Image (cartoon, rainbow, N blue to C red):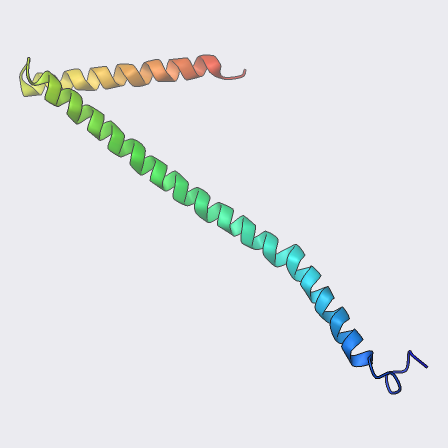
Length: 104
């Protein structure tokens, strides 16, 4: 009888292969999806943090560059205020442009 484990010499190998394939399927459907989700969260947070740092540094660089250029013609204190108005105006224009592109 082939179904009898005592007389079938390949029974242990077949059962082991079935268990291995079942565990592999369960692992593929659970663990791999969880790993992908966790990686997406980690890399997403890393991207957001680096993006905020990059935007902050670019704005600081823009302020200082405008202040340095304007300080050739006007005093430093006035150059600081004028640079705030220039960068603020640029950001306001950019925000207004993006508001026209949104879907209502």
